Length: 167
Image 1 (tube, rainbow, N blue to C red):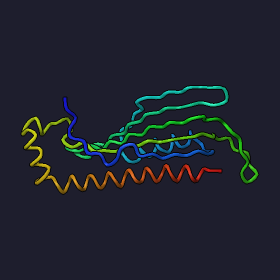
Image 2: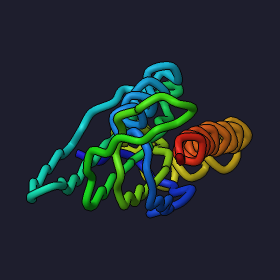
Image 3: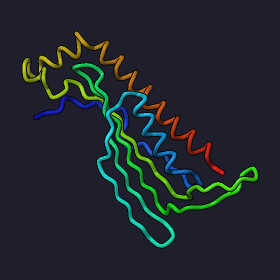
Image 4: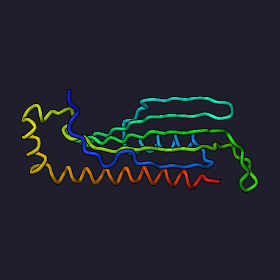
């Protein structure tokens, strides 16, 4: 069964950070962002490799949001965290327990048109193209812009969290 036609806004966008930050809090913040924005979220894979004094993580997430009966947004986030270790720092006279790590986040973002190829099954590939080019063109363009704006909010959220929590 087909899943529809994918249009990528971007693939494998990287956000890298080597510093001290609270990874658990970042994890919760992104999870919460997906909930607030109305995405169905699931963890596709979680790998944890422990070594003396630190841990390496690989986490693969996928979030989907159905916009209407024809369009769905998909955001994929992959975390690669190397050497995460617990550290205790002092800030403003307070001792804070947090993490130190080398983190890379890779994101891909796309939208799916004609979910499950419903229209294609009825009117064929040519009919779907005509529909998208002449009838639904403006709505599909508006959906693409909306997805772009949403994913940029997520990127800003991640970047501000990581830079805000640098000690």
